Length: 121
Image (cartoon, rainbow, N blue to C red):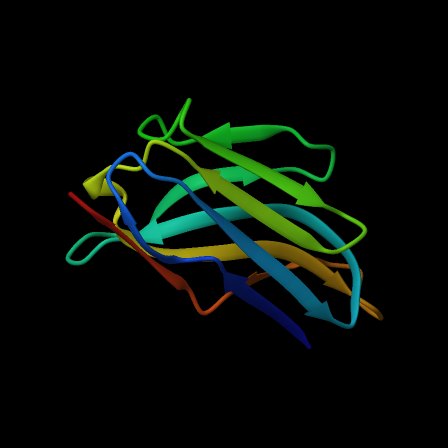
């Protein structure tokens, strides 16, 4: 019913930048909160940043001041601008969204397949 597809990951040197994008598609009536999580090898998945429909944002302490989340409601997309990347930012990054599909009155949480970000020193 709903697909989330991330793009923009890759290999970057320490101090570099990447911009992740996530496109939502399907029988979408409305999208509520959207966000980015990441999971490094051997670690639990953690919240990186979240954004509400109205544009309110929250960030993990480890990325504050370096990462910026944004969204385009018309295009059903969410972005993550990552600057001053560090080796500890290396992880698979996942997009997530709370989506209301046509014919439903409740939102459901969906996840993308993930995109690899590798920061080399």
